[in-house]
Amino acid sequence: MTAVRYDMECDLLVIGGGINGAGIARDAAGRGLCVVLCEKDDLASHTSSASTKLIHGGLRYLEYYEFSLVRKALIEREVLLRAAPHIMRPLRFVMPHAPGQRPALLIRAGLFLYDFLAKRELLPGSSGIRLGCHVAGRPLKPEFKRGFVYSDGWVDDARLVVLNAMDACMHGAAVKTRTACTALRRSEDGGSWYATLRGPDGAETEVRARGVVNAAGPWTASLLGQALPQRRSQHLRLIKGSHIVVKRIFEHDHAYIFQNRDGRIVFAIPYEQDYTLIGTTDLDYKGDPNRVAIDAEEVSYLCELVSQYFKAPVRPEHVVWSYAGVRPLVEDEAQDAKAVTRDYRLEMDSGDGAGQAPLLSIFGGKITTYRKLAEEAVDLLCKALDNRKPGWTAKACLPGGDLYGDTPQNCAVLRYDEWRDKLLQQYRWLPRTLVARYARAYGTRIHTLLAGRVKLEDMGPELEPALYQAEVDYLRRYEWAATADDILWRRSKLGLHVPPGAGARLTEWMALHPLQA
Image 1 (cartoon, rainbow, N blue to C red):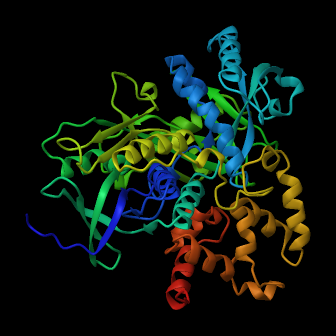
Image 2 (image 1 turned 30 degrees about the vertical axis):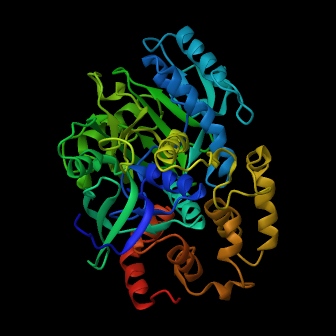
Image 3 (image 1 turned 180 degrees about the vertical axis):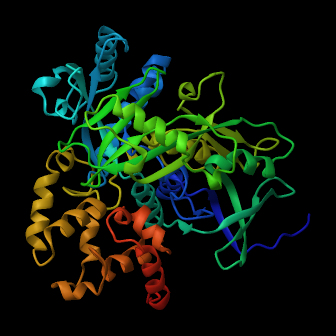
């Protein structure tokens, strides 16, 4: 047998720093496995930061009889709200109804099923409303006279990924961003995997792992083909989803779900205080996932659809920001992209039999069910790696989510404002809007960010409006932020609020002020 040189050894190598990879690394590390997570770019830099920012059961999936998926997502919806009440919150959705759309009785039946497929402790149920008597009716055209309202949740998707990676790190995992897996091969005896990781400086590290998780998102199939070229694997169907952001269209705190004649639905969601987020499209995508972008036709489609509902039309020139991502969904028989299943599939390869190092590939999934996916994935891996520790994440807070104790609590969701108001008093030397933003972004980790600071001058220079050195240093030290885009667009959405040129200025400042150990 040929000896192979390696620089690092672990139980589990997780390839991919999106929500599924980070969730699996967290769960596995918490069960005592030695975990290495590598991501070729920044955490959540692709699909996982390009979602509609919803924790939801998927009301429209009921049309495709995906009752199991919807029930699973509805259960997870409240588990996640309790685990991270700072980056998530309940949200009420209004669905205006008009003749020619899905029949009102059918919608009522769907909402009834949506309410009762899973137990609810945090979210109110659905009801019919008269739009003329409801605050959500004011921005709508007068022909929309009735509608429905129901509950789901909002999430800061990129921060959810980061918190899972942080928790994995707190349980002993090594998280390596901007580190690509350039080679992956089984040992001659099949008992190990050898991977070559190339870091941001070009240096290569050889890793020996007892098992590998392929959570590479849109690149899952290509990575699997590289590792096991002789095996036929599950195919992915890449679906592009695009979103636009415009100045705030309405003043209330409800969101809208709009039906279109083509059977698709589009959301309009309050976003970053001053904006409205509109999306998404569903289009098959054949290009390079690294270069996915919204096109003019998608912008026009979204503007025209919401303009059918709002009194004030939305035009392409109103768009202040847009983003697009590719969802790596399980290939099925669906003709239309919007009908492709959002459920996930776990494909395990254990070589030629017992004692062989496993390779688990993740196909499909949605952000709401990531924790359950991770739990099921790690259950499979623990069996293969002879680890008998059970899942634990269903009853654990994510970093910063322990507002009212170490275990998830309903009161952390229902009494969030009360907890935030105490912070406003504790840190009254800071602007109230800044403390409120820190509370939402960092939860109880705000105390780490502000440790040792008692006056505004202690925050360091204000690099951009409401962005102080203290926060930049925190993000670089604890959250793997390495570039201006990491800070302005993924760790926060300050990019929407700062003056033009902020990215270049922040990049220059970071280069001149390396983080001190």
